[in-house]
Amino acid sequence: MRCPKCGCEESKVVDSRPAENNDSIRRRRECVSCGFRFTTYERREELPLVVRKHDGSKEPFDREKLMRGLVRATVKRDIPIDVLDKLIGDIESELRDHGTTEVDSSALGEMVLHRLADIDKVAYVRFASVYRDFKDIEEFSAELRRLSGE
Image 1 (cartoon, rainbow, N blue to C red):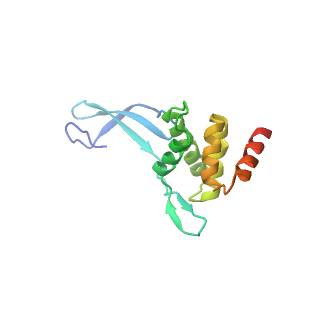
Image 2: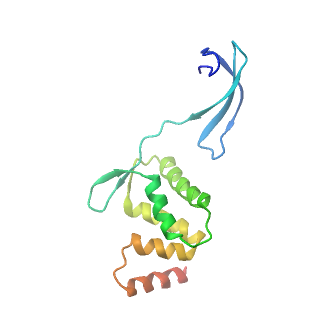
Image 3: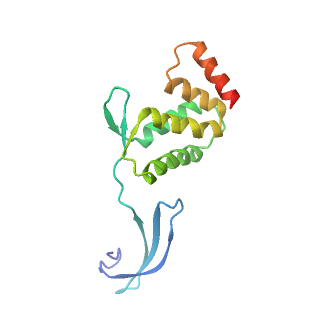
C-alpha cells in the first residue's frame, strides 16, 4: 500500500478490525519510511448484481432507484433515511451472501415488502400498491386484509 504522504510502497499494519457494517476490514497502517499513519479499507471483490425484469430484460441493481421508490412510499412518515439505507444494505448483503448475481424483480420486491412490513405498515401498502400494480380498490383491500391477518 503506497503511503499518501511520501509515496513509499511499504507499510505495516498497526490495527485491523471490521468496518462499521461488517462488509469490509478497516486497517490502520504506518509507513516504514516516514512513519505517517493512514487508514485503508479492504473489501471483497463483488460481482455486479443484475435485476431480471418481468419482460425478460436485465438491468444492473440500482441502489438509488430502490431508494427513490422507498422514499416515495415513506413520504410524510417518520422514517429516517438511514433506516431505508440499512434496509437496502440488508437486501444487498443477503443476495451477495447467497452468491446471487441475478435476482428477479419480483423476488427483489418481495424482499423489500417483507422488511418494510416490519418498519411501517402504511409505507408497506404504498410500496405494494406500486410494486404489485393494483388495478382497483379490491386489490388494495385484499392486501390490507392480508396484512392485517399476519
